[in-house]
Length: 392
Image 1 (cartoon, rainbow, N blue to C red):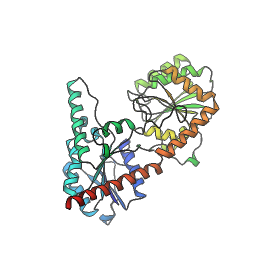
Image 2: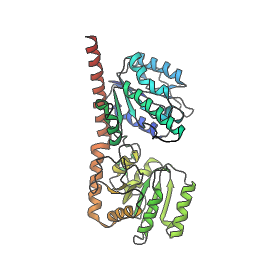
Image 3: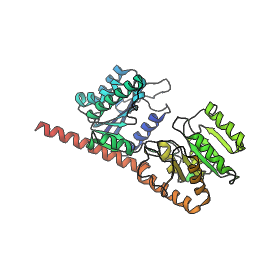
Image 4: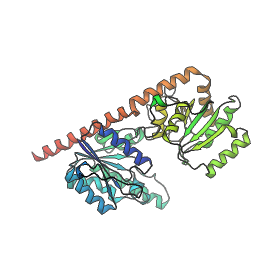
């Protein structure tokens, strides 16, 4: 099977879409005859073009007319059997208004006669009474209808979105986690990063992150657990005003030296930090789900997970089996769940076993590769079966 991946961003750009596309490409290469990527040209990229154009597997476009030219060329020379379209509204258009991206699956289906599978990383903005936000939310939903109607299948990453889209396209929705794009160091090579016990938070400073509640919860634990530290790591500015406020609070409470603020670290160090942690915490208010690659990195580390139970929590996350869940904005409950892991070895060991099992079943490269290959094969069989019936 020949696969073409359409994306806005790709390596060496570092963002969620680029990292995910790189992971998906590597997984496809294990089972597909060829995997080609069409991405936006950037100053950071310096491609060593192969002498034979048929050996090239990464193509670049400058603008949307050039995108169509490159797409036509690839379809003629590479003859893809299936196209995977990486869709994030705000990456394809300002404020997520992206008519070109919305019409792309229909164009490919009609002009090139190739089935399109759309990976829906984001769907739309929430409804709002503000006129601008209301208009954007409407535009995003129109785009979703266009993509959904023209795509052979749509991939979503969590149960909430699966349930929402199945109301419109019951037979066209696959739920596949975004996967493990960070913290990928080989398990056998990991070593604990610090000599003292610590809790790890890995994330960004988005408004849905309950980072302050986590720090308040830690303040309640610090008095009894004298050696315990809280490590903050991820894609955030360590000099941000929000971080400064957290540091000020830690100083007032007398545990500033036990608050370790790292910010961005390379993947090897991140893997070691997560591996050596006593507890990894997920305090995104939406809850743990296949939408969040942070969760996959946590599960792969094999350490106990404590998380906020939000509206997007996937049913695979079972309280007491592979996670301990606390209510949103309830730092007392969050502290109690962390304390339970710290003070009860039986609970910690059960959660660690559950995390490893959940990772292998749903989040590992092997699990994702099987789901993706099955979905693409299904898309290909169904598409050509429909065309055969049409011909008859």
